[in-house]
Amino acid sequence: VQLQASGGGLVQAGGYLRLSCAASGRTFSIYGMGWFRQAPGKEREFIAAISRSGGMTYYADSVKGRFTISRDNAKNAVTLQMNSLKPEDTAIYHCAAVRTGWDNVIVREHEYDYWGQGTQVTVSS
Image (cartoon, rainbow, N blue to C red; front, side, top):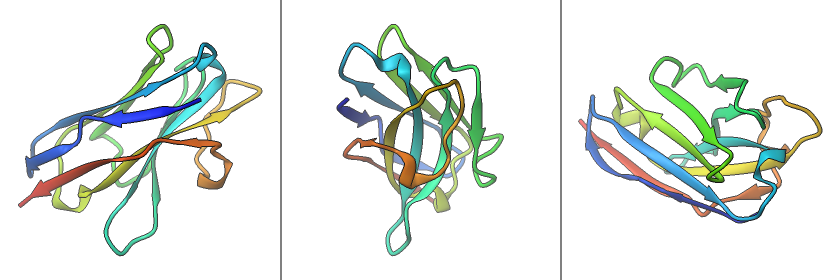
């Protein structure tokens, strides 16, 4: 599966952005999906994950209550709604896909099979 992330940009602190990840292929619903981010000089970190059906989600503590992950299997797309953005949210955001045998969420980076190219999010103070 090929992934294309979009929706990044420059926003003031307290603002919002909505990231989208479009997936190619006809079997999108067999993939668990996740969002990760990498800030300058830091390692890539997990942000959010969603199960194949969309029935399960999981968030990093740093974004819980502010970010929402969702998916539309009919449109082969997953989104990340980011509210109440902070300067520390500045990073390149990547979507990722993992083929799973059941409807669960995957949070470990090394388990993901496919990665998008990333989209830059910059939050000014």
